[in-house]
Image 1 (cartoon, helix red, strand yellow):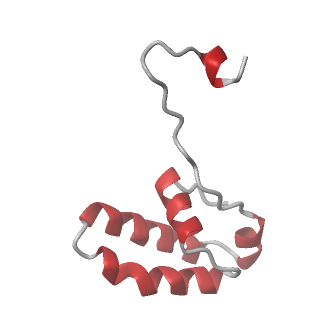
Image 2 (tube, rainbow, N blue to C red):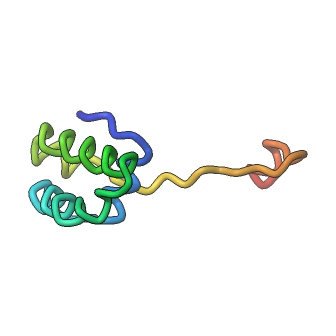
Length: 84
């Protein structure tokens, strides 16, 4: 299976499709939106390359879920983050 970055996983989740072919089509369709942002364009292209290299079965087995960063204010503890 492919190792997707957090940015790639989030991008794929934003433009979610039910099939690998559909996901690739989604990324091709939105690529022009990112042509003025080299960093985001690199994420789109990298995600598309990884999707193209995987099998349909691998795509269906991969959970493309958004990854939200956990932000802590200064002075917060891990106990607070876990609701203790």
